[in-house]
Image (cartoon, rainbow, N blue to C red; front, side):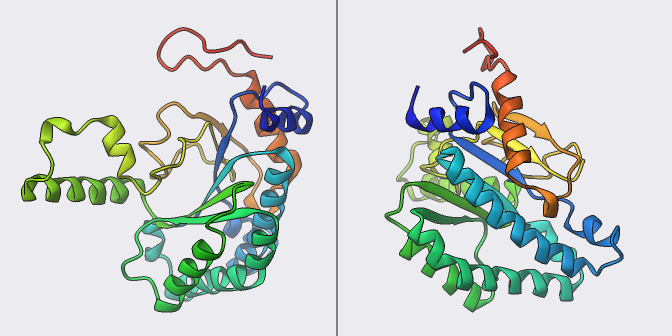
Length: 253
């Protein structure tokens, strides 16, 4: 068992061998606030604190990769004031937390469509990725202005352009090539996808990469998510038998 798996076992109290990459759909900020009679913005602000806790918990658990679905390409349909507030939170998070993430050995990667983003947001993203490019303790992948269908359309267009230019034979296009041209190129597919908020769907998140991921849906709203919920999801992962369409890869703990 690798050292990462050993840390996971200690954190979750179970056999989580094979768990390198956890992806989380952070859902429930608005409902968390509404149930407390607060504006939705307060839910988003509390959600940032949950991000900080989860990054720390992931470091403690020895995860190699943590992907967070922070802003969907469909979220542009929300009221403009809410969208601008979410952008403000991203600005604040990068400015306030980037130095600590770098100190802790966290590499920051952002996936999603960057066309149309405010120029200062794009600059902050580049700054975060450049500063942390050599860090390897934890890869923090932030899905921002991201939608899985949009990702696949952009990927297919890039490959079609290569075919049109004569630099790519269509018969050479296979699953590894498609994976290598997605936003997540170079990142292993998630082993475990967690969704908070009680909804039971993927909502256009990592649809290609989720082919063999284990799915865990939690009723807790994202602002209340902490290390106990992450470890509970890891324990649930450890109880699953992953067959990848064939025989069992391992037995449950």
